[in-house]
Length: 143
Image (cartoon, rainbow, N blue to C red; front, side, top):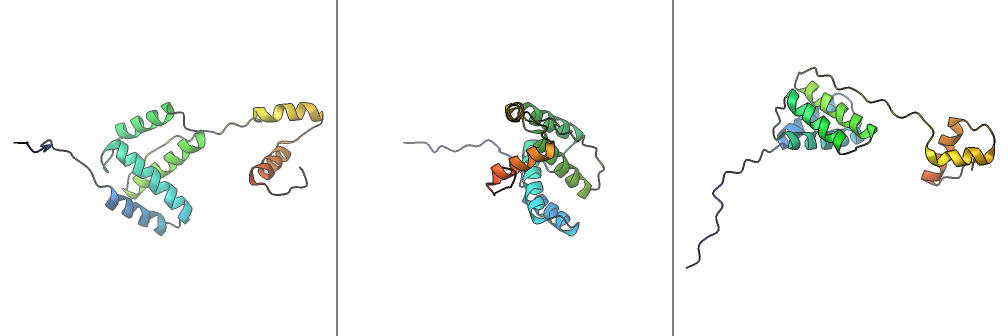
């Protein structure tokens, strides 16, 4: 006779949906744009899943930040996680600090040859305009 394959181990699965719905309402009530709300809710969802609870501690925040740094996320992404987590704790009535990372303010390596070949003074604004035109494929008088 074949035995039933029943797993009797207790698996705890926390449902974060009520907390995330409440967080969404909090952001809507505070006038955040829909695109910002979606990003914040997604980021906080990953944060809560990582922590395994919706009542996170300072240790959870530090561990999450360290793991995010270790996974080589961009500074912008790390800052977005920080803003979302800070807003979540603000909803809970907690005032936390989350250090913002400054962006890299240097000319990207792929423009260095361009600057050398043109042998002219190219301002950062011009480079940004060219980059925007290339990335978005809009005609630009600078290209």
